[in-house]
Structure formats: structure tokens, C-alpha cells
Image (cartoon, rainbow, N blue to C red; front, side, top):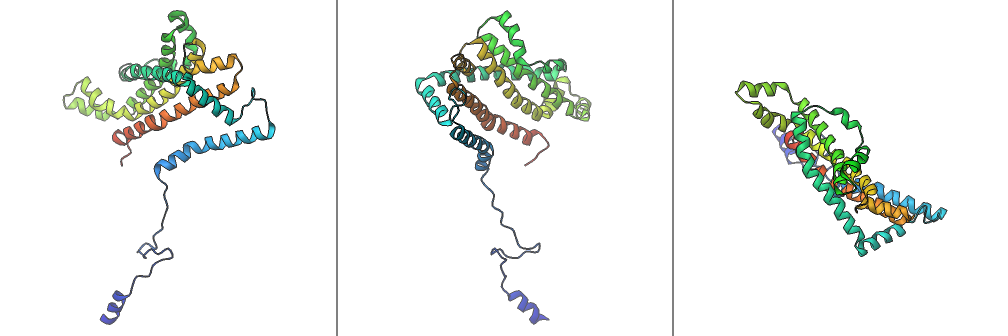
Length: 278
């Protein structure tokens, strides 16, 4: 018995098919995992690359008029031209500045309204651009009308998601604060705000999307510069390559803001205050 045990102990481990030692649960499986950044870039950029390839193929086979469907190369040349001329950087700066100004003013108001005034839900069904005629009449064809339209589109997703987040906080936690002698301020600060933060982050991400769309639409009509104005000017002269270039820049900027700013913010908020734990 001792000899057999000793022989089994001295036997070398036999590697599996992939050179991995055997374990109690069977051979280990080597799984290649791509780098998170590369995987995210492929997931986000891959569909657009495929779309551009199909676009180029259609242009090469059908040869449509450039006024109807310009080639990707022609659009890229127009992007380079507007960059060198300074038109595109100026309009991008105006649009982004308006969006950031709107976000800085609207996010605190939306959160406070969601915490203190759970009303006006029906207003979320009214598109922001529908208010632009009212703003033009009351505020005039100026920067204020553009900001007001974008703020309306930004405000209500933040407000609605704050309301949803507050409603998902268990009432027993509020009662616990009250039992320990806390006031309404303590309930808001220590229970409602932390509990609603994941939903607020989701509302901010959605608000950026709605606010960006409303901003571009308002810029098209008010004609005070910006990417929307760039599209409208190109449309007025039938310059399709610049229109497509403007749409590409608008989509790229929106995707970049969402990927590099809003998505990480939402994920970190959910991990810190939500139900997901690292």
C-alpha cells in the first residue's frame, strides 16, 4: 500500500491537450479575451465601417449623381476642407459650448425638480422642437431660443429618471431615517439622492442625446451658427457632400461624448450606488 501510494505521488503530471495541467474539475480551458478598449471600439466602429464599405460599393456600381449620393472620399475631402478653412471647428465649438452650457444649467434643476416636485410628466410627450416657435416669438431669433430648446430636450429625461429613481428607493429606508431622528433634509441627502443616482445618471445620458438633437434642429432654423446651421446652409445651395459631412461630424461627436463621458459616468455610478458590485 505504501509503495503504491509512493509511486502515485512520484508520477509526473500529464498535461492536457493544450499543455494545461489536469485539475479536479477537468482540463482548464484557455479563453482568449480581447482588450476591453479594442472590443468596445470594434463594437462601436465596426458597424459604421461596414456602412461606409457598402456606401462606397453602391457608389462604385451605380455611379449616382454627387448631388444625390456623393462618394465617401468626396465627403472626407469636404470634411478636410471645412477643417482647414476654419468653418467646421468654429461651428463645432459653438454647438458643444451650447450643449455644455445647457447641461450645466439643466441637470441640477432636473434633479431638484425630480426630488421635490413629482409632477409635469405629461410634458415629456411634447418634443423639444415643438416649443421652438414659442421660444422664437417670446425670445426672438437669437442664442437664447437655441439654448431654451436644447434645455427643454435635456431637462425632462433628467426629471423623469430622477422621479423613477426616487420611487425605486425602498420606503423602509426612509422610515429608518425618520426613526433615528432624521429630518426631511436627511431623507433626501442620505437616502433619496444616493438611491436615485443610478437612475439620474441614466437620465443625464438620455438627456444629452435628446438635448443634442434639439440643439441641432434649433440651429438649423435660427441660423446663429453651429453644426445645424452648417447643414441648413449646405441644403440651401444643394451642396450634398457638405450635408453628409456635417451629419457624419454630428454623429461622431454624439458617439464620442456618449462613449468617453456619459457611458463611463453611468457605469461608475451604478457600480458605486446601484445593485452591481465589482
